[in-house]
Image 1 (spheres, rainbow, N blue to C red):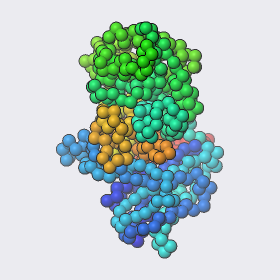
Image 2: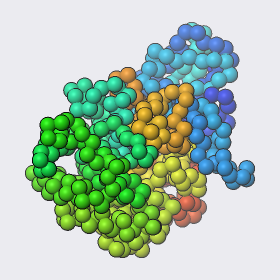
Image 3: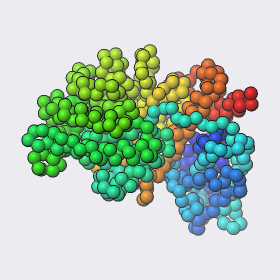
Image 4: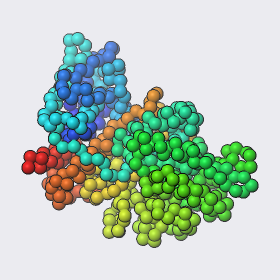
Length: 553
């Protein structure tokens, strides 16, 4: 017996459980230029030694379909859910460590197998062409266990005759060059590194990430006091008899490669340590003929005259370079990540050193305390989603939010314990709250906690330092990035936001909010939204149907 089901992309198909709660799909709709995804879940009662075969029936969309094998990853850190009372754990996928479906591998035609009574899934992507003719397209999938045993499922995708509009949202997922170099055992800024970097940047942009964290100095992030991360400093520093000079060759190549791949904006890496701005970041320099000397770091306090002298020398030259390169208007600066309420005085002191050199540039900072904006220290504060409502009354030039390893339910996040619907819903919430930007810290953070030591995210011994599903959206494959379900689901949420914006251009914002309210049965709040798989499918279908009606007028 072979059991084959067509289920929602928001379902998590665990190997040890029949997906009885997975929403079974028969049809859906998409706009031109949109990526539409769903899953094929299957199980059989025999061991299949040879590779199974999955066939896609002839269809005008067949050549635009991509099949990916869903692979389970080891999950150890379960987030805060395990600390809750049993009655407070409602809504989470699971509360114990184990295997969670996430990794996507492009090897369906080579490796497709089954153990008896174990559930597997294949991820299906339909990249709807921008010139696709509007209409209904039947899709059929047949899975062969052997020559005599097979199962078929059918799906109908309606293509709406309107183009999914371009993404307006600024979106950053911090890129970690040290992890890339360590994963592929290549030296920074060598031809091999640039080659692998380009593959990741193309993946980065293809998933709606358009703001690139740029290590002008080695990032002062997620590093234990006294430890250090691999040097990734783009700006070459030379100090001769106390006088500084700077070489921006690698930074120029970085910017031009990123532009080529479609990156829109750049974030200059933080100029002071994380969570308090007490120390200088790691900086290496050639000093009086001695190469790669560590001149700043944990051993030099943030307000030390020597570090101020360095910034007074570097920042004017950096600003001049960015203007000459034509990217000044597309750059953000960072001072210190996540300053707390009792860090205001220290932040103010270090910010004064920087602000005088970067007039006209925007300071973007993960900061969840309003005084950083009201006192003029941070032009673009990025509050964590739990603090977002405190910032809504403020007259901000751009509105951003973020999450990291927390919070979890009832907020949106992408950690493994949470339902995928709580990941995708962020796109709709970004629309409801009229957000201009979204930030997250982990596109490819593959270090072992705060040690700076590489930790393969595909290892059976996952990183114990961060909640599973938080540090990265991609995995290191032999030839380049391997995608995750979490990345695809979040991108689907960004497509939802774009579809809502398209409908707003046709019907007005009030009508769109009314439609969301009607579908949800209530006003959506940052910490109050339906987490059922069916809700987001119903909402997108309602939005697409409304767009279709306007096209007929």
